[in-house]
Image 1 (cartoon, helix red, strand yellow):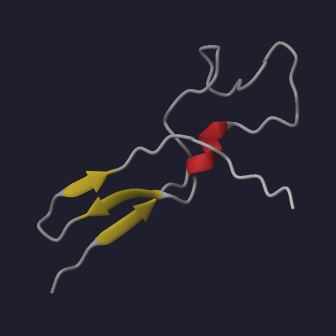
Image 2: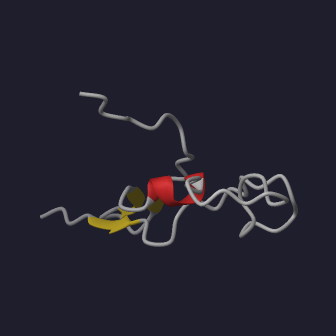
Image 3: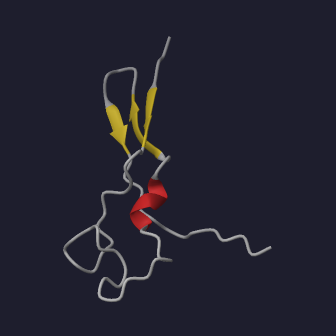
Length: 72
């Protein structure tokens, strides 16, 4: 019987979306805006790793893309 193990992202994307070298300073860090959301958090809950029955694994590195906004 095949058994696959799935692991999901709990920490966010590994990509640094900040214009500065500090990944914790996202957006315009000179004039902070509390309404900006760091795209690093957009990948939380997505599939991160699949461990195959043969012993190998596949690692996924999704990046932030488009964000859906319900305007209705």
